Length: 152
Image 1 (cartoon, rainbow, N blue to C red):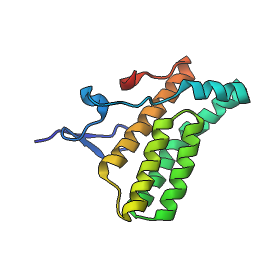
Image 2 (image 1 turned 120 degrees about the horizontal axis):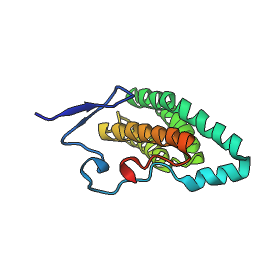
Image 3 (image 1 turned 90 degrees about the vertical axis):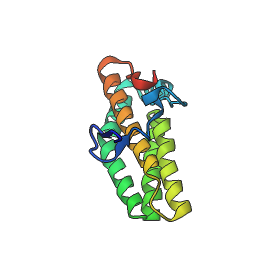
């Protein structure tokens, strides 16, 4: 029987022994969760306090944005999926969460192309990347270095 893990914070989705993230078994390419260079550029352009506020606002709104995207995707509301994915992708890229931005856009692309519920593994990947991104931002705000987590 396959072992099922619940996502630690989101409480939805599962990870079975047959479907894994690249880091679980150490196979396959694993994306960088957070690009520090983008955050450094943001701090240089806006100033350190403003960049921290921007990253903190992004982090605190991330769970809700993922929930909105997931619900819209599961209900196959194409316009809502695209609008939410675009918002999430742009805000993610702004703070250096490029892998999450790409994953959000991949879910939207899947819904629009198939006009059906997206692949479960695409939603799981999105949720895991959101969790890892949030963890990296929390660590960055506390220690000044992002959480290397499973990718570092």
